Image 1 (tube, rainbow, N blue to C red):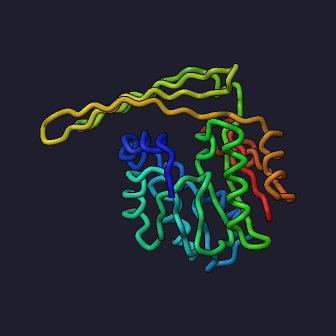
Image 2 (cartoon, rainbow, N blue to C red):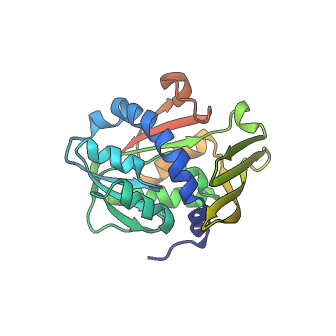
Image 3 (cartoon, rainbow, N blue to C red):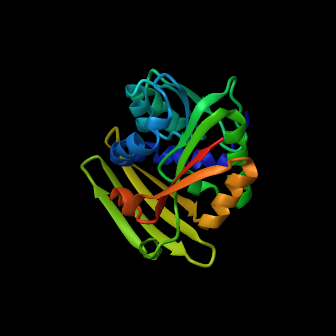
Length: 246
């Protein structure tokens, strides 16, 4: 399967993501899944963790007794995922065009992964793919960052340790609904500092656009949950969970 070149950009970020974000998100997210996802998916079911990143969510799904397939476009992310969840099966593929050998009972895409799709047509393709690999009456759960006042602010995150440094500068283009993250990373390797720079983007979609795209893909039953208001989940205040059934 072909993989879009953009995903290779995430390879340079994989070490930092695994160190600082994978676990930070997975703990509260799994607590939310325990309320809105796990009751609908019997233990032993096959779950696709779409855009699985470094595998902390996959590890949590395994602990709950599920069969897990993880899929991501970054091979470096997958190397960490295989370490974090060795009992899962991992695939290097594009979320817009992947295929599976058999249908799954549920698909999960966590931590605003789908915001990294830059075009609404790409989001539609992912939804259509998910619908095609789901068993009848299967569940699709994902979250997206939506446009909120707190998301519009420019901010900076600095991490400074003895052997690594990360500076992340975030800005938002309200006209294009595009969040931009400029990352500068240093790692000490064999007593030599190595620098990497990259820019990552997130597209913020309108809530109605998302619902229309789900309906177009064939999902007729959709529930939504505001992460901050309903669960006190404040990693990105505009986060919305969507639970769709085939």
